[in-house]
Each structure stands twice: as structure tokens, then as C-alpha cells.
Length: 337
Image 1 (cartoon, rainbow, N blue to C red):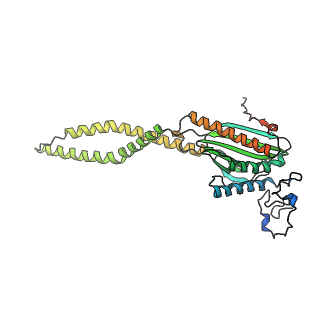
Image 2: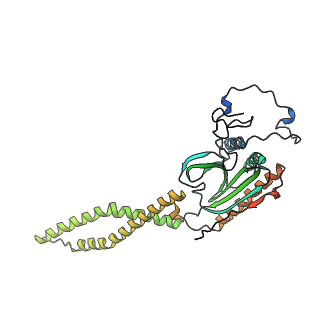
Image 3: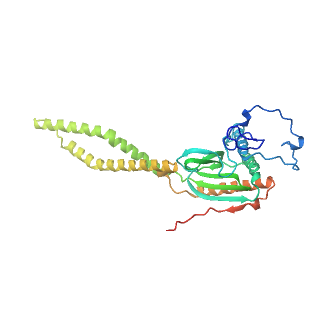
């Protein structure tokens, strides 16, 4: 059938237009005869497999399953009912985004893809199987969500990714069709931990800044007034000695003045650096982070392996040979002058 809004041809079973997202269910519903028993999804038969819906509807169903699980079982899988995309490069568009798709998740550590020939029509089935497997497979202390990620720029593409997060580690899984082929991509990010020492030093710098800019001026003003009163009393025969107050005032000014200036300059540079990192990498705490430790690396390796194993298990369960996945390594071009 054709979309009444944009004219795009869609499958008869589609509920949403592949191009503009028009909801066909808005049209008057036509009575339908009950499906034959051999075509019912509840039947375990494999003689006549059901016709797979378009991939956009599959992502909607997958997101619905994730959302229901989060409400019923306390899972943190998100609702992805707004996900779209039938082919790589043909997903929904976002107007503008100042960050890349994985901004705020740390540094990319691994990016690998697989391609399975002539199995693009099984992408929707694999998405639903992976969704179900994530619901039942236990990932300790991990949160799993299906999230639409946006590219960087103006009128950019959105792609639905499974995000598996454990601590500072994030692994992204993307499943879609590429022409007639099935495409699977996995990318892993590790966010460096925040240093407690740097955090304490930042707190002390803020306290010192507040003291030198708001408390110290009042104290020094009081000392100057006392010294002037004492000096006047001495001139008219009083016994008050203002020399100690003047010496203390000069010592405080000579010591705390340069320190306050350096401290204010350091805080200013830290704020500028934090704003820059937030605008470019969506990480306002970048100035407090240090190198990852061995525990972080352990989490990264186990999440990467668990996600890849989940995909391979799901491929085998839907009748595809996981050994047929052909790895694709990203290439890094070098500029030649």
C-alpha cells in the first residue's frame, strides 16, 4: 500500500510509513479474519515461517518489549518506540546535533562489524531475539537500553543502538540490513574515572577563592582601620602601637595576594577547559579524570565478550550459522600531502 501523506510504497502489514512515519492505524480499521492456525506465532512450526515485517516495525516491537520489561521486572531497558530505520543510511533524521553519537561515553576502545551475505531480511528477527536474550540473560550491575543515537551536524541520521553500560564501560550494538545482507556492529567506550585527589584539590581551590575574594577583604579593611586609629592615637600621645598591625597587614598582602591571583587564574582555566570539553565531548568533568585502572579494563573486556556471545547465540537460535559472520575492520586513512 502507499502512504497517503508522502506516497511511499509500504508493505501491507506496515503500521508506520518507512519515510515519514505516518501511522496507518489512523485510517479506519478493516475487519480481518483470524489468521490460520499454522501461521500463528504461538505455534512452534517452522514449515511456513511468518513473513517478517519491515525493520522499522521490528525496532518498534523490540522497544515495546524492552519498555514492558522495565516496568514489569524492574529492568532498565528503555522504550524504543520511536526508533526507525529500514536500511543503513535510510533511518530517521534529526535536525541538528552538536555532539557525535557516543559523546559523553568516554574514549572509543574497539569498533568491529560483521556482515552476513543474503540475510538482510532476517535483521528484524535477530533484533527481537537479541532483545529477548538481553531480558533473560543476567549482566551483573549492567544497564541495557535501546537508544536512538544521532550523528554530528545539521540534518543528521539517527540509528537505534543497544547500549550496555556497566560502571564506566559502554558497549553499543547495532543490527540492521545493508541491501540484501545482514549487518552487525559493536563499539565499546571507556570513560576514565574521576580522581578523588583532583576533586579534593578543586574543592580547596574553590574555598580559597571564596576566602580571598569575600572574607579576606573585610578582615584587611578592619585591620587597616585599627592601624589608622592606633596611629592617630600615638601621634596625640596614646600608647597604642600600630606597627604590629601594619606588619601583619603587609605580610598577609604579600603572601596571600599572589596566591589568590594564581588560584583565580587556575580556576578560570579549569572552567574554560571544562566548558570546551562539554561542548566537544559532552564531558564537563574531563579535567578531573585520570587513566583507567585494571578493574575498568576488566569490565571493558567482559562486556565486549558477553555482547558478542549474545549476538552469536541469537544467530544460532534463529537458524543462522554464526560462523558465517564476516568481520569488517574499520580502516583509518592517512592524509598524503
